[in-house]
Image (cartoon, rainbow, N blue to C red):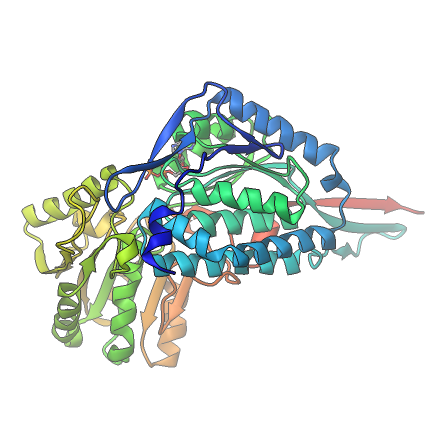
Length: 491
Ligand code: ADP
């Protein structure tokens, strides 16, 4: 794909919500400017929905769930629709990658990788739709007891801006496989691919009202959706603070929630590790998507005998990293918006002011537009585990290194934040691999590797403030459904 498409992909398009199979402006007529993070310029706009728009979308999804063709469709046919959607995503892959990349600022190769994962989610859940079974349960004499997995009903999906297409896919794939209908609110900073994918779903043959998209600000559209009394279940990926607000809103109606929130994920490097194999993975785990990844590997814990060698190597690699516009396909793109750029820069400045040692800074491509939201990556060494930069989620290209002595200290440091999303363990000692993997409080642990956000087949979610509930893999199908027990008394 040339630079051309990723610069022009949204030109001349009026982006609309999709409610009941029809393009819909906000009832108020208000719109939100869409800004390219690469140059700070407005290149499109989206409707700014309010509570009345949310109401329309929820009513449509309710009707589709209760009375539409969806409610009578066998699981294998729902699966077929998902598979067809996956194929359409593949067919329109260049356009989707360009749209995602322009909208979020991520390098175009990441946009393409996101298309591949997105396609795989629909393929995976398309195949899974008719493979979830209930149980028969041995009960009293004269009874037969069984369970059904039933859809929740109307699910609200509130999606963040970092991996919009992929996160929508893991929510929609699992929700539709189990027979739910969905009202999705993408982030105000990255709604374009969600709109496009809902259009493709109509083309694939999804009945109207099954997949509704509302766009708008979190405080208006998002808040109205999560508190709506006719929503049966809420799934959210995003910051821990917003997750708390959404849970409180959903609690008004006592609705279930899945929360995939922040992280401060550690990678533990023991002295016997294969360092050459680890180094590129340690860098990529924090640089991928500019560090705007909930599962970014933002802390590296290094055993003392190899601390100097590993930190020197990491500093050499960090010094060469270049942030560049999305279509230049640099090591990383800009941050998603000005606010995010400001937050990351102030984390770096505050750590520097507090005297944390800066081992290396990357750079910003000198030809990058001045008004883009760029941040030069930063590597901090010998960080105090209690320091702000060691505890808070930065959500940017900022890596902190820590020295440890022995397994016990490694585990203690790994578990010393409020978060527990992902961890990496690097060692050749098999027994230690098992011991440490079990002791680290994280929803996913990778041994001699690291998958920031990767693996659609792998259950994913947090401990502690990283959230609860599990997405991805088969697990997500259980979160997206409820067990009904039926007992027959036949005497
Ligand atoms: P950021 O702080 O970077 O905007 P958030 O985690 O707040 O990231 O945003 C993730 C998603 O949550 C977006 O779709 C956003 O619109 C939505 N959102 C933000 N605030 C609220 C809220 N109070 N209620 C519901 N949704 C919200």
